[in-house]
Amino acid sequence: MSMLPPDSPKRAAPRRVEVDGVDGSLWHLHGTGMGAEGVILASFKGMYHPQRSAMTQEPAFYPGAIPGDPKTNPQKIDLKLTTFAADPIAWEAVETAWWSAITDEADATLRVFNRAGTSSRTIPIRAESYPDDSMDWEPGEVWDWSLPLAAYSPGWRGQTIREVARDWVQVSPGEWVGKVRVGNPGDLPAWPEFVLSNTGVEEWTVPDGIDGAVVKLEKFAASIGEIVVNSDPFTLQLDSTTESQIAASLLGLRWRNAVEPSPRPPGKTGPIQTVDVEIRVKGPTSPPEAAMYLEPLYRRPWG
Image 1 (cartoon, rainbow, N blue to C red):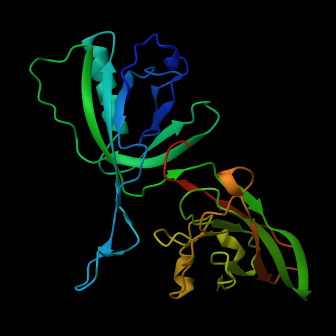
Image 2: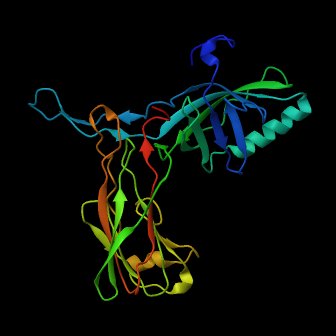
Image 3: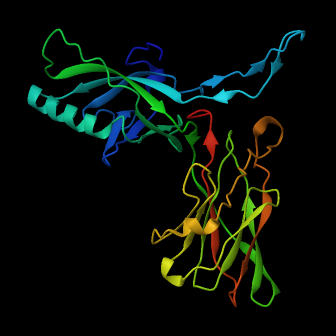
C-alpha cells in the first residue's frame, strides 16, 4: 500500500476490510470501525490478483511452445497487522481473542468492500503458518505481526443471486416443467445450488449446467425435509434440511458442469446475458417450489 500521510484527502474514505473469525467473532481491520477490537491492518500483499501458473508443452522440433490452460494455485495473502490495547493486560486479552479467531485448521472469512462501501466480496482464509514471534523485549500495549494466509478455495465470493423457478407448465398428469433464470456475473465458473420442495411425492430432475445435462433424483420421504443440491463437485452434492444421508441414493451420478461467466455487452457495461434452464418434477398435483442460489466468483476483491 502507498505510504500516504494519515491526513491525506485520498484517505478520507478508507476501504473496509473485515474478518469473520472461526469462532464467530467479527474484526474491523480497516475502514469503518477499524481497530474497535484491537487489531488494525497496516498493509497487505497478494489480495488483488489470483496466483496462476502458465502450463506449456515444449515438444521437440516445435518452434517455441504450445500454450495450455493456466493452473490456479492456492491464493497467498500476507497481512501486516498491529495489535494494541490500553495496557499490557488488555493487550494479552486482544491477542488471545485474535488467535482464537484465526487458525490453520479451519477457514475464517476475509471480507473486502468496494471503495463506495456499497458491496463486498469474501474469500475463505486460514493461517498458512503462524508468524515469527521472536521478540527482543516483552510486548506491552502494541505489537506488529506479519501473518501469511492461504485461500485453498480461491476466488472472491460476490453477493448470492437467488432465482425462483417460474412459468410452471403441466406436461402430463403430475408432471411439471418450470424455468430457472441462470446467469453468472462473475469472472470465474460458479456452481449453482438448488433448494427443492419435498412432500414425499416429488421426483426431481435437476439441471447440470445450462447445456441440457440433468441429474434425476429418486422420491424421498417427506420426513427428510427440503432437498438441497449443491452442484460443486468438491462438496456434498445432495443433502436435505434434516441432514439425512440421501447422497448415497445418487449411485455414482454427479453434477459435473459449472456455469461459465455470462457474456456482457461491449465494454462490460449493462446487464449480463441470462438463459432459462428447465427443471422438472413428477408427482405433485400443483406447481412445486424450487429456487436456485448462485454465488459468483471473482478474480479480485473489487473492480
